[in-house]
Image 1 (cartoon, helix red, strand yellow):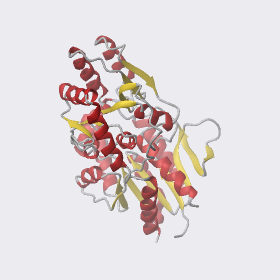
Image 2: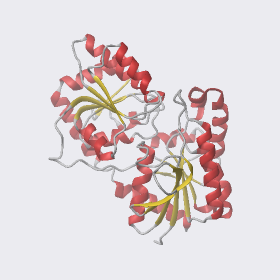
Image 3: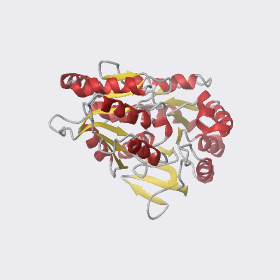
Image 4: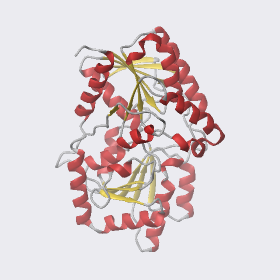
Length: 379
């Protein structure tokens, strides 16, 4: 296989932002760079120093200044997306790459990048992490009508479309586009002997925005309190809804149970928190893949999530086998948490099965599949 000049396009970078998309892009990028490819990340400039730096063999290109991605209401802001799209257009007009891979939900950058690449479009890939389809109005209000139209235009681009999960591929088919490849994320398996004794009962990891649905977990913990249970909960992550959910904790008298620690510096610290908890709670109603659920599985920690049509994690978690996938209702969530917290053998059995299944999701496999897809486009 020949070596390629590859550009990943997204609107945040890892570790400045620690979402699942950012982590996946970074792991693919640095591993492809190790294989000799020239890899660039076309992202907002969110790090200290020069707008162009090299990190682990990967060239980070700050195509615009970094701006908050979310409004105070927890919705995606429009201005940062426009600035990023303009920066991507300028760079791709002036430089050529063998392969450009745009990550969705960077919809505007996908359109601007496609326009900028001109005759080089055979090396253009759009990787879908989410497909909102009919959910735009709920997510964005009036602006959702525009967002829905933009997403539809991206889905119609005559390029290679890929998805990060079968769930997202199915959602993409609702937009009239067939994913030519489904390439899931990888994960590092926590080796035997490296497990940390549980220091919290429940962990939550995610950006604090409405779709992550942390309020449901808080209500579930309150219900457990009426049953004489007071589980300790650690919340990892930050975002515009943090103050809202901190206030909910105070109003319910749960300040002694629920601890907000904000964003952690490294992915290793996040994994350590998950691995030192008994259960990972993931009440999100919108996940295109659910990296944190896979990381929990790799650490042998069962997951409680919600069965929702936009939540791909409910496809990763086999109900009653590797965790619980329940109705998005606080009482049902509380029941599932209680069963796992009170039954040590059940936790161990589910954790062992989850870890066994996670073993098939390696980063080497993800990179192999990604490299093969890129080579087929370039060829």
